[in-house]
Length: 183
Picture 1: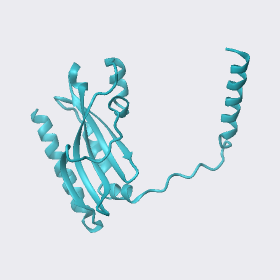
Picture 2 (picture 1 turned 135 degrees about the horizontal axis):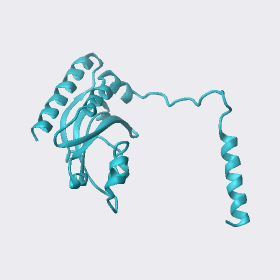
Picture 3 (picture 1 turned 135 degrees about the vertical axis):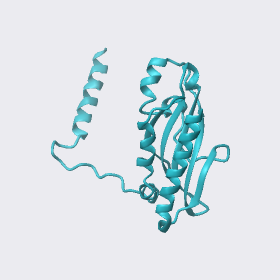
Picture 4 (picture 1 turned 90 degrees about the horizontal axis):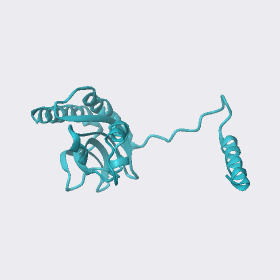
């Protein structure tokens, strides 16, 4: 490493230290929750999907959940793939999304299929990395299901119907579990 490179590295380290907040100082303000996030909280999306990842499945490996966000949407997803060496080739996202469509807040539940996008496949590295994040290998942000995806439910979000949406989510996840268990 040249003297100039060392100097640049040293300056970079000093800038990083200077930009840190002082010990015990005020924490940076968290991003304000959006209406999308509130809708997902009201239907208990995260907890409902988290229950899926706690169980064992005969034919799949299931991970998550993870909160995902876009410019005009928020979602909670779990991801799963078939067991076996070639199971990595297709990953499925099962999720609940709150998004705008025709200037109305909508609630959608669906399954999206993602194809493996990385240039190589290393099973050891993949097995560890996929447990925490899917977009490394599948180059996807977890966006709302489109026309080519499997839509399980879509409705205009109405605060007064939040409990019925919760029940619908539970019923859809029970049906999904039965389909997965059947193989």
